[in-house]
Image (cartoon, rainbow, N blue to C red; front, side, top):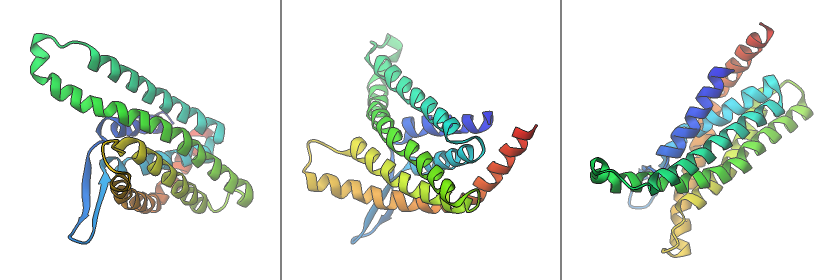
Length: 212
């Protein structure tokens, strides 16, 4: 459980500090699709959510989510303070780059905080409701359905708040956001399916630890 929470918090911090970079998935004359590098981390976060919910229940999973929200909030606050502090003579040369990089992470942290509030708790809620309906069977169904729905909400909320540019037309903004959203979400869904065996393994692993 400690290892799972550690990996969970690592994914949260890495997504916050490094997620501003996007890379092209498809770049042709007719189709341009991009994705944030955090696409490799978010499915794992939701997978860990499902493992903890299955073994320890939704309240324990919600506790982990609340802890991650505290981490994001602390990261946001410390980033604001640290970028406002004046640099020493030794740091003047790198101050502009420091403020540019971590200034972006302030917006990403705020966007992620709001997206997390909606999506992570929604993931736990949907997972729990499907379990109430179908019982302990069909773990593959509830993990993938809950992940796909909640990850769409997370991606749409996060990308809109993180990448919407007030100095650009609405149409151009949403064209770029949806160029990120569709592949971002579809790849998350694919990764969620691929990681389904990890959910079964993680559940068995935690149950064995719980017995001990």
